Amino acid sequence: MTVLRHLFFACVGLILLPALAGMLETLFALLVDLQTDPVRGQTLLTFLAGGALQLLIFLFLPQPFRSYVLAHELSHALAAWFSGARVNRLNVGKEGGSVEVSHTNLLITLAPYMFPFYSLLLLTVTAAAGLFTDVSPWTPLLPFALGFTGSFHLCFTLQALSAGQSDIEPYGPLGAYPIIAFGNLFILLAGIMLLTPREIPETLLLLARNLLDYYRAVWNQFHLLLQ
Image 1 (cartoon, rainbow, N blue to C red):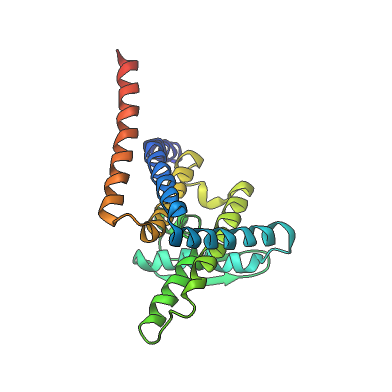
Image 2: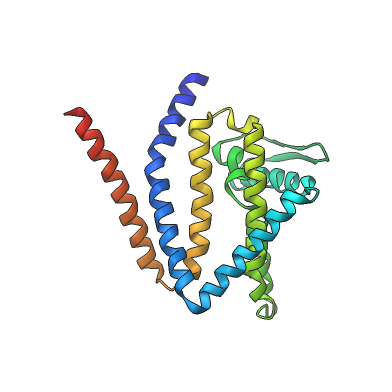
């Protein structure tokens, strides 16, 4: 059963590879749009500055491991809650953490690696605060904070995956890693899409065109091999 599961998710991972390429090309185009826009280009630089600062902290200062563990286990718990599972117990300590849920699935298992918890928390708090007060005085700091928290997620996720994680075992690396990459790119694209000067329908059309081009290229290669 484990071999069949790994084989199935390996196929899913392979099917996702052209989509990842299309998403990366779309992301590059959006970043070029941002960089060449005088106002939004400054926003991009602020975002990158936040990410660079966190990277330096990650590399040269003691790592806030417990903060990552907290985000990791809360991501499991929130994904379980959204999936209709019961969260029975959550533990966070210096050496690691755990969460007990009534049942699990792919989203619950891989959520900590796919979604930047603190970035999403920051956006949620900002949106909620905006319902009751004027948040415009500190929203210019939001790109920096999102860059910082996004870099935090990326650094710790790569470190955790390189060390090996039991969460990956049910799906195998060939299945889990493309799914994780897809989740991260989806969140990043959604965020960048809101900042670019392109209209959202235009951006979605660009994404669809890029995805179609890559899948068509793969199909053409496959067709040539069969001839």
